[in-house]
Length: 420
Image 1 (cartoon, rainbow, N blue to C red):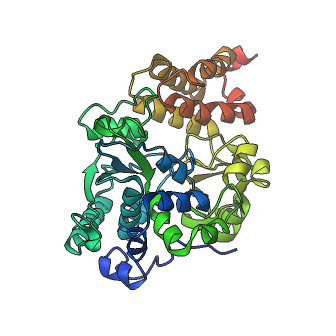
Image 2 (cartoon, rainbow, N blue to C red):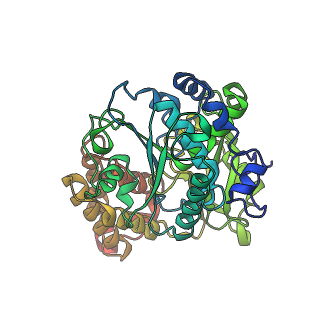
Image 3 (cartoon, rainbow, N blue to C red):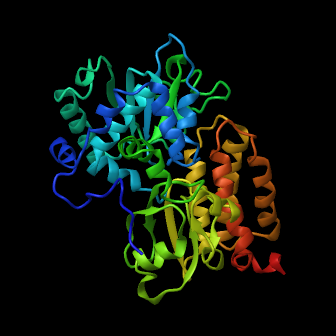
């Protein structure tokens, strides 16, 4: 199989991050079309395309835009470029190599929701991404593609760039909004949802880098054209960052519905160094792990992942070989979530640290069966709406399924006397 390149079609060509290159391959033709459309028609087109959010939850994009109320309040448009999920690096490619594509998508989205101010919230560690995006914004302003009276249409849209300070929690949309306002990056209670009361208490839409990048292609080619790609409920292409012991790790853009093992064997060249596959985490560190056997029947789409009781998540495909120490890797993930918890909610603040401590005890060979049972008991109290945001659920997703599916590996590390 081959990649189905839509957003990354020109990857590898010279200076793809520049305005000159983007225009030479048809860039900024979609906004000319969109600026002549009614806002509701843009939303309908995106709805009919079936485009779903590419940041993690997979919520229908057009539907999210339609929630913005008709009001005199300012409406804000935010791009979540705070790519912090372990194993995820696909948005980085779009930010560094195709910045103008995302900017064009944001302008179209702004017209659709009648927004005149947008912000790109970018991960603080992404220095090259930040520089490339700022350069693209400067070029767009100089060319009259941003600012007042865009292309003589009478539509105004200002777009600013804001760098985060290294907090994973700010990838959650309401924590991102708080951070933009100069507050602590603490998630907010919902409702109200951002569509009603987001940035500065005004209607706000937050979408991912990849989501915005798909929008110009939908407007240029039509909803029906886009919907033909993928599956009926998972349309279009999706970018995946593949890491681990495969021959060709990297970022791949494929049609949704592609078998997981086709991605691994055909595009990534299979397992490296003659190793056997043990498991794959298919959507970033927070989603449940798949065993090698489960991987054989899993497809890269929202429905198939749901059937396998996991998710596409952030698009990070983490491959684990037969010699991977799952006790060690699971402890490391729990430690990450304990470190990144904002501390607002007791089940998350206490539960993630407790989980990490128990896993460390087991890893070092001092754990007991009671410790293993306690982790599973803890997980029940940490998930399912007991916290403001899903970070505690993410920690559970990284830990519990791995223990359940590879229980013998954890039991083998228990203190021998207690295990007996």
